[in-house]
Image (tube, rainbow, N blue to C red):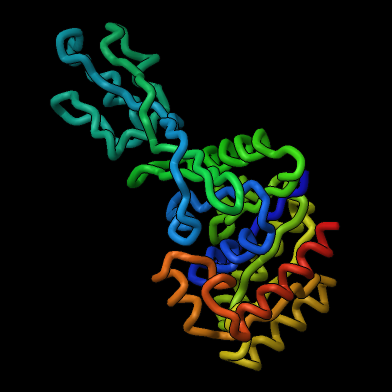
Length: 285
């Protein structure tokens, strides 16, 4: 099995649009939307939902007032100030550490599992899609990404021996979960000051986890000077520059139509996406 994680150091670089086009070009792969905090790959793949499951990743304390003697030990031990003066737990403040549950002398506190979101298995014309929806302000997105990748791995069988992960932006826990153990990473960047800065940060993460790395510059024609700076960065560190894609309104128009760019347009951007995908396949081989 080969696994490609498509990531970006910042949001808004066109990562999901490119991931959708690569999925279309691959034709027969297992697809994972690892950007669980803002999952939107389904908007352009038109999946047909097959399975829905709860994602349970945390616990929350609850004080049973009929058993509570208001001794105050739980309030004293709670470092997050989650227990009010009338001994009710604020779910927004509770970090689920369980100290109050274990310390309560009256066993008046329960520590129940909390549904943090849902994960789904869907069918698309390009292959099965494993995706999720994390609840508002819920945590453990890295754990959810890991679970999605595991489920995708279970679906791989000949000829579906390629997993394409639409990864999250940034350098945090979800990105680490999307990178670890992947065959290769493709960083989507753009020729802006913030894009260059975040490219450097995400590449250092890839280096740390020893993941083979490629770079694709989206909207490369918007700033030639910054594009050259990105190329220099890649040359100095022997990073494969998989492609350069020009700015086109077809990206936005394709999203509005709910389809990958490569299927919506046959313009310069679509041709560059195809060439980039060919470079990625060569790199994976």
